[in-house]
Image (tube, rainbow, N blue to C red; front, side):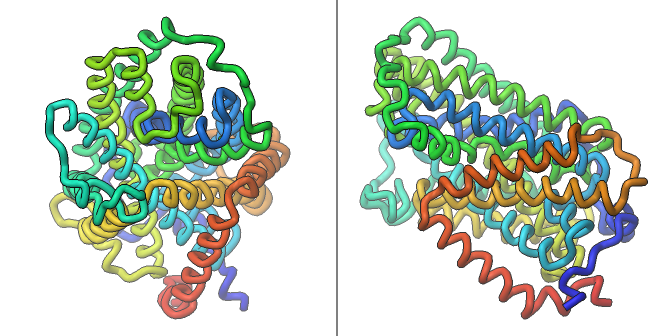
Length: 461
């Protein structure tokens, strides 16, 4: 029983075996762009419409504020951990050092669910905008290849979603430096597009559309917050890059906070303008930002927004898939997954086999599962990760008070407790079927651990 809670020594975390460490190529600007690249995408271009129409109405603005506050509490905990233990694996690595192997395995298994399904969900949103753009040029993809079977549109598979995931997989297999350059360019493009929508749409806002402001009550607002929480998981992906950062103690907190602040401000502005232009009852569409511009007869601008959305969502795909690969890489390096997943390419120094296997699985899921099912499961995985990293900060303060901390989260343990409570409140607001699916996933994870991970763990040797 004691072996289930054996902890990985901090010294071992900070000094991986020779030939098993990743190349350090990223700086503060790269991390900020990585965070923005992950945060602004499907959340702003896709989920805003669904969350407003089904849950929050015009009070979607408050939903984003609630989700942003919950993220801010967790972000402070992430910043302390990421700068103190700057290695790949994010929450999985942190819990391995503080709570033991079994809990680390479960959160790692949870992160696999989070990032893998996030990649697939984002690919579904990308496909919707891409098809909208093609329609503008008079090109239509056959309906059987245009959507997943469960989307209710008669589709057999979502071919565009499959193709874009495989393209991103190829890019990531070439190296993080090259991927970061592509990401930085696309982030600048999508920020310009979001600012263009704000500058244009603000003149067409009708305050009457904000009435009733809270049509589904405060419960709907909280459910909306739990739904759009999917939009905020980018700074978690920043922490997965810790091992590839040149100056992690300085640059990781900068990347986490700057990306979260910029994106929260933009989310609030876009959701306010969106619900001010179009009555919330009409926003249950997969491309709400472009739809709003078509609604006010700005068709050319809507086409430009669709292009910007495609660019923006592509960066989310890149960062989500990257996060998944780095988590499974860390778990493999610890022996909990087969060594296959941590082998590095001799030239690119990337876990290339891991990258291609993960990318192919994500592409298949994106092709055959609809967006709504994916988004709810991703939110559950993200929220549970935030809860655990908040608890881990308290534990590490107690067990390793002597560790040098470049950034210290304020008001510990109060702030981590607030993070646990706020994230827990959002978790219980998710649908019952999401909880059932999540519990089944964790049960499968336990089975895998006891059949393989426990025996092959490096700590077992």
